[in-house]
Length: 151
Image 1 (cartoon, helix red, strand yellow):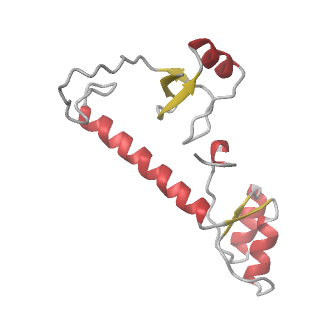
Image 2 (cartoon, helix red, strand yellow; image 1 turned 120 degrees about the horizontal axis):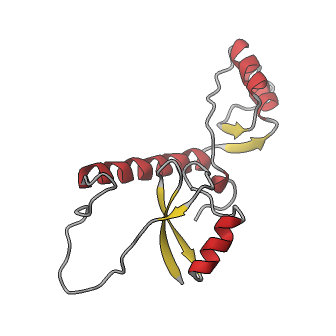
């Protein structure tokens, strides 16, 4: 099993586990690898060096980022990790009503259904209509990687 450092076109970094380099290339070419943050399938493998245990502990975060700044690399990783945690919290604390989102939001707003935290899919027109009716909604794009079991 190979662990590869990957990055999408939006510079979100993540790891992927593959049986071989050829396995990674085959999955990437079929569009099966998506960024867990934004869902982008324009994924590239970043150069990486093998980890050698030489008995000396490196200080975390001392590696350079793309622009040579370890501080910026740490900040970017921290922001991405925070976003992923918050996205998981949203998914864990809401009920997915799918394409029935607009209908269910209206039912709750008009007292026809119990109020609860919901999420789902709505078109731009449906979202605008809900807002015009005074029903608060927050469009939140959820990457495809979050639809289904999150590991």
